[in-house]
Amino acid sequence: MGTIACSRVLQRAARTLFDETGVRWSPTELLDYLNAGISAIVAAKPDVAATAEAFELVPGTRQDLPADFVQFLGLVRNLGADGQTPGRAIRQVERNELDHSYPDWHGSSGDAVLHYCHDKRLPRLFYVFPAAEGWVELQGVKALPAVTDAAQTLPLDDLYENPLHNWVVAYAYAKSSKSGDMNRSGAYMTLFANALGLKSQLQFSFAPTDPDVAARTGEDA
Image (tube, rainbow, N blue to C red; front, side, top):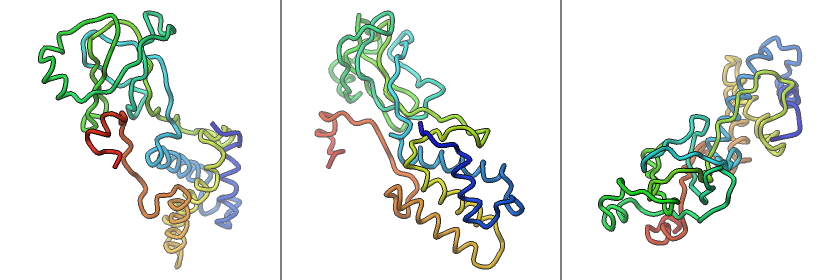
């Protein structure tokens, strides 16, 4: 969470656009562009919205990512029956290993979760072994609430002020039909991407990887 008001980003953008009175681009439009920029940053750099929270397990091995999360990053430890008691660490494992070693593992039960597995092709699902009651610590990326008032504090760290300014200006120029504005849009979008280390890419994959699993699959190569 930042410390500056969203209005600061929007006012800077309006000055850059030579439209401080909002004639060509209304404050509502610029606010929409700001929200789009925030979403783009979260998609490109999920760590900016990453968090760890207590998660209550449902019966069985299959678990669904909470609705307010957009990406699963992993499980850390058991948290007991109250969600506050630190317990045994949880390790990532490949599902085919469980299938091979414990063919009936989906019918398992225990006092604590030992392992979890996750397939990024099904990003909102993960499995625990054995099935257990209680709580675990879940790491994931949360959806940031939309900014509805320019007076609100920026929902990202202050260091993203400049990239967001560049995004808003790029989107505004992209709407314009004036000569040269599309080139200006591209220039500001390049500044946005470069500031995030993305070059021409605006998204990249970010999947949970256990060090041991990565060593076997070569994901960290």
